[in-house]
Image 1 (cartoon, one colour):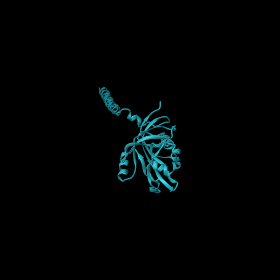
Image 2: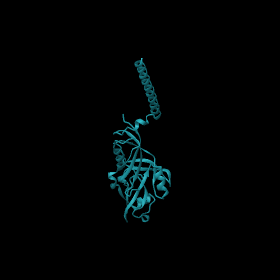
Image 3: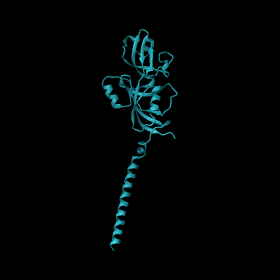
Image 4: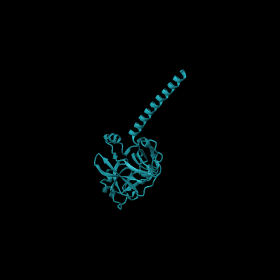
Length: 230
C-alpha cells in the first residue's frame, strides 16, 4: 500500500513539473511572438550583397564632426556656432563598389534647412560598404577612409566666386561649404555642374587660388537594419 501511494505521489509530482514547464514555454512563446522578428535580427550579421540602413558621422582630420545622422550630436555642435550638417540615414550595399563618383544625401543645416544634398564621395561609400561585413544590428564602429588624403583641389579665384567666396576673405584653416559636381576630379574646372554640397578646409592659399581639402579620414557607422540578400 505504501509503495502504491509513493508511485501516485511521484506521478503527481511529474504532472506538476509538466504543467509548470508548459506554462513557462507558453510565456516564452508569447514573449517571442510579441518581439516579432526583431529578436532574430540580433543574431544576424551582414554579408556581401546584403543591404543595410546606416547611421553615420563623418569626421575631418581634426576629429570634428562634419555631417551626422545623430541629432543629439548635431544639436550640440550647432549650438557651439560650428558648421555641421544633419543627414538622413543612408542605404548601403555591403562590400560593393559604387559605379558613380558620388552618392547624394539629403542634409539639413541651420542656415538653409533641407535645401541641399551632400556629396558622399565614392571612397567614403566604399569604406563604409566594406566595413559593414560581419556587423550586427545596432553595432557601431569607427572606420578609416584610406584615400581621404587625395581629396584636395586647387580652386581658382573665379571658381571660388561661383560659390560666393572671395579669395581675399579666405585664411588657412577656414571651413567653407562648397558646391561640387558628379566628378571629384573636375571640381577645380568649370566643366562640372556644381549641385552638391561639400565641406572643405583651406589648407593653403596663393594668388592662384586656394587649396581646399575635402577629405574626411574617419567615420562612425551604426547598423540600423539589415535586408538579407537571398
